Structures are given as C-alpha cells and as structure tokens.
Image (cartoon, rainbow, N blue to C red; front, side, top):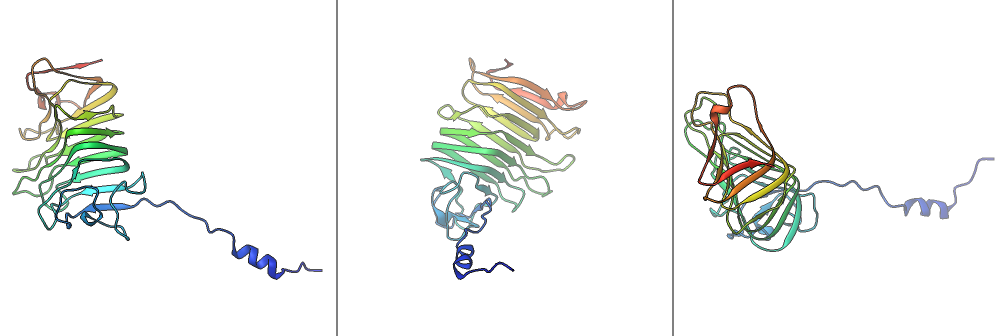
Length: 245
C-alpha cells in the first residue's frame, strides 16, 4: 500500500524554512545627500532599501569611484564598523577621488584597493586614502597607479597623519606610481611590504615610501622588491628612516 500524505504532513512541509544564501551587498559612493558623511544612506547607491556600508553587515563592499553630483567625497568620522572590501578607484569614472578617516574605527576584513588613473592618457586622476584621526584596521591593502609609457597618469596614495592609527595589516603592496606615507613612527611587525615600481624608463612610475619627519621610523617584517631593474625606481623619501624587524 502506498503511504498517504496527510494534510498535516503537507502543512509541515510548507512551513519548513527556505534555504538562505549570504550575498555581499555592494555600495557605490554618490554624495547625493550633499554631505561627506559615510554613515548616511542617501550618499550611497546600490542597495534597496537604502543603507550605508557597515550599517547591518560586516562583509559589505564599498567603492568610491566618483565625486558625486555634489562634488563631495566620503569622510568616515565616527562609529565602529566592519566591512568586507574598500575600493578607491580614480580610473573608473575619470575623477580624482579620495576617502578620509578622521575618527571612529573602520575595519576592512578582506582587502583595501587604491587605484590611480591608468588609462586616461591626457589627464592625471589620483586616488587616495588618508587616516588623519580614528583607527583604520585593514586586512591588507594594495596601491596601484600609473601606466608605463603614458604621458600622464594618476597616483595611488595612502597617508597616515600624526593623529591617525593604523593597525597591523597582513600585507601592503605599493606598485607602479604609488606612495605610502606616514607622519608618525609605525611598527608593522610581521607585515610583508611589497614594493614593485613598473619596469620602465618613464620616471613617473616610481613607487615611494615616505617617512616624513626626522626621528620617525617605519618598520615592517619583510621588504620585497619585485623583479630585475626595479630597484632604481624605488625611492625612500622624507627625513625619517625605514627598517625591517
């Protein structure tokens, strides 16, 4: 005899919870609220209903690739939040773009990518991240700028001001026409700093590590310089010093 499916059994099946799949939410800065405040949903697009990166989830993807309709760029000034990725890219929409961390704490759990212009041949467009206050806690980050052989190209920049805090990332890559700059002593124990200027005679594609003031030191676990003929394009500037630990 075939088993009978009772009405009660059907109801039980219908009440089983549906499978759920986590999906990373992607945000793009617009500045449409007319302010520079990170924590305003109206300044971001990509999610309905409107939210801002890190509001509800810790794996959000935040992208800054335009200065928006109101010529404002994001400032992270308060609160403690975690996101998955942060991308600052001047190349996407041919704009000079930046993000400033002035207070609070921002953790980026997977990667931070800063890309200076690499395709627009007639104008420099720069991309930068500045930590002038608060705490920036990246898993690791990658700076890339410049287009070998091009007449013009933008630079990717990271700057740690004297009042900002950078927690120890897993790794840092400074490639092409890029600059990593600090205005304070910073010890990044166990961190691999990979510096890879583009292998070209174009003087503009120069990777720079800059320790601004005398008496300050930037210390990393391992320094790796990529490829043959790259060393002539690596520059340590400023009055401070650089060391490995």
